[in-house]
Figure 1 (tube, rainbow, N blue to C red):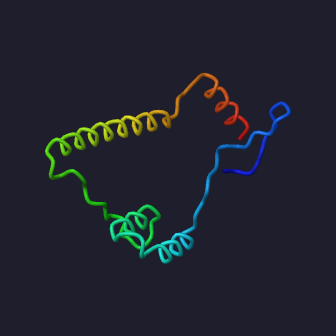
Figure 2 (cartoon, rainbow, N blue to C red; figure 1 turned 180 degrees about the vertical axis):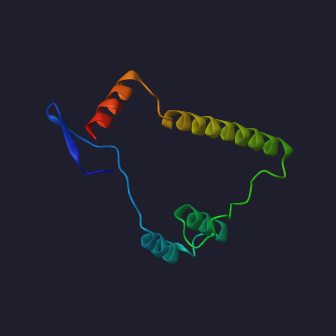
Figure 3 (cartoon, helix red, strand yellow; figure 1 turned 45 degrees about the horizontal axis):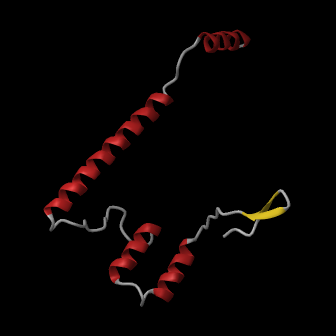
Length: 115
């Protein structure tokens, strides 16, 4: 927990938000010291999450492929997520497109006259 406090009335209330940044060197050191406690799969997951010594195109193995119900549910979730991401990307692209307005045209004309 963050040690900074804020005053509210007469009582001090601790900040409940905290964030920590770990460097790749620290992750390597943690993996080296805790490596014998982690399974190979857990170590690989930590390395992939932190971007250490694992290829960019490598993915974790899929879970639930032996169970048809779980496979169908995971596929449905994946499709839904991809649709949401595509919709978000389309919204961002649309928002990035310049919009012409009378005010902008007026400013552009004034700037061109200054040349």
